[in-house]
Image 1: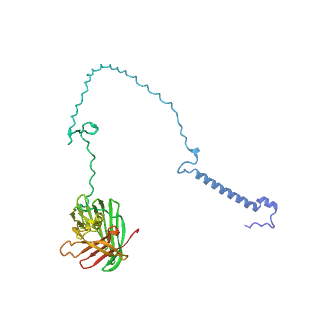
Image 2 (image 1 turned 120 degrees about the horizontal axis):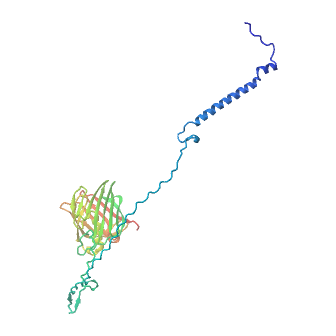
Length: 366
């Protein structure tokens, strides 16, 4: 078959009108149709999405089924049952009341005793208000507090005021860091703390308890040596003292610990300095440490001048006597009137000959 013949020249306007519109117009129409189709697809997708069931409430409330409610008339109230008449009780005749008895006259109290004085006049003893009754019982006595040290003839205790005193410390004459004595009291309770250093070791002792008219009553005594602490507890109610190893001992009246005994001595000297006018006066105490309790005797041996480094101070010298044969430990204390009879010097001599001295330097606040 022979191929069709191509036109010899460009198509005329009549031929374009027969075949259709201009190619540019045709392209615009195709884009418009594509856009309309895309919009139609999106609209169908959106409408389908909106008609999907939601998780909470339907979006198209017009498709929600309506609930029809029918109002019924309220039920008629039921008629109460007819009341049953109860017979009225007849009043009973009142029982005759017995005639009132005559008021009994209380027995006459016995006549009060008659006391005759030495001058021959008589005195009538009556109770309160003159009724003849015995005297009313007085108020119950207050419970007794802890018993203080038993007072002897010529003894009187006057506690020193609170003070913190600093002392120069010497070991065999070589000066060490200063020590101190801190004494606190409020008239009812006391606390005594003693601190010192020997070489590079710290020693601290503390006593606390109550105060009575006759002196100190320790409740707790504590020692701290080289970082190790031990304590003894005084139970005045039970009459025992418990030591650090777990043992106990009977607690005698007036018992002291190793340091309260010196403040007990201070109070006695303050209360009656004339008692220690002549050497030889001896005080006896029961003294506990953290291990046991032993008797202790302190004797006044006379007056001496103590060099404090800031002047000479006159003081009364007391020495602890030997506790047993061969006891080589010696304890001495000097009490100065210029310091309110507080210690101006303390010295302890160990069995090996080592001497530890505390010499007064100053008082805080003075």
